[in-house]
Image (cartoon, rainbow, N blue to C red):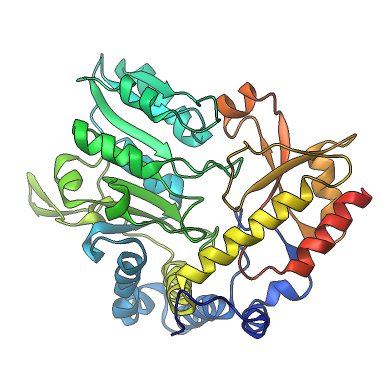
Length: 398
C-alpha cells in the first residue's frame, strides 16, 4: 500500500489510467454521475457472474459469504464506525428513503433541511408533510452563498424530529459545513441524516468527525463502483430509536406465529434479494481506494477541480454557474448561445462525457440563482491536466 499523503507521480497516473479501460478512448468528466470503473472492480463483477453461471445465484452467494461480509468492514475502514453500522441497498436513494421513512412524524413536527437539498429527498419531505402534517423548514444561504448555520440552528425547536442535509449538492461544487451541523444536532439532541452521495470518494468523509446519526451514499459516483448499489451508515443509538418503515426476511426473523424479532445491526434496513456481484464489486472499489491512498486521491481530485474551474471560467463565452465558494469536484457552466443539453451532445460527439443539471435537481438553489439548466463537469484523480486542456479547447470551439 502506498503512503496516502504522497502525491501521485506521472507514472502512477499512467498506471491508474491503464487500469481504467474506459479512459483509453474517452475524456470522462462525468464522475459525479458515474465514474469509470477500474479493472479490479470489473474483475469482481465478471468473476461473480461467471460463478453464478456455473452454480446459480444462491449458491454463488453462499460461496462468497466471507468476501461479501468484508464489504461492510471496508466501508467502516473508509468512513468510520463499525461494520455492524452499515447496510447495503440497491441505491443511495433506497438507503436514504429507508432511513427517512422510518422517522416517526406526527402533526406539528418539523424537518430542518438546507436550500440546496436534492430533489429526491425534498419530494419525500413534501410527501411526509402532506401525509403526517409535518412542516419543512429550510435553512437559507448566507450573503456569501454558503449555508447559514446560524439560521439553521434558529429553525430548530422542541418539535424538530430531523435535520437532513446533503454534504455536496448534485448541481454545484458547493460543500456544506456538515460537521458544524453535526455539532448543532448533537447539542440539540436531534436526529441528523446526511446525504453524502456526491462526497464519498472525492473528499474526506468520516461519520465520527461529522457527528451524523445516519449517512447514505452510492457505489457509482466518485467511488468508481457499479450502478445498483447504495449504502447506509446508522449509529447504534439511532438504529435502536427507529422502527424500520418496512421489514423483510433479511431484517427480521419470524420466531413464532404471532411474533418476529428484529436484527440488532444496520442490516435490519436491508433486503434479502440483492445484486451480490455488484456489491462485491463495490467492495473492490472501496479496497482499491484504500490501497492507492484516499488522502492523495482527495488532494488530486480537489486540485484538478480547482484548475478546471479557474481555466474554464475564463474561456470565451463561458459563464460559471457554481457559487463563489465552490470547491468540490463538480464544476458547472453555461456557454453563450447554446443550451446545456446541446453542449453536452456536442461534447459527446467528440468523445467527451459531461452531464446536465436542471433546476428540478436542486430547485430552491438554482431557481434563486436563475439557473434553469447548466453543464455539469466532474473530474477525478485519474483524469489528467492534458485532458483539462483538451476540454477547454473543445468548449472554446463550440
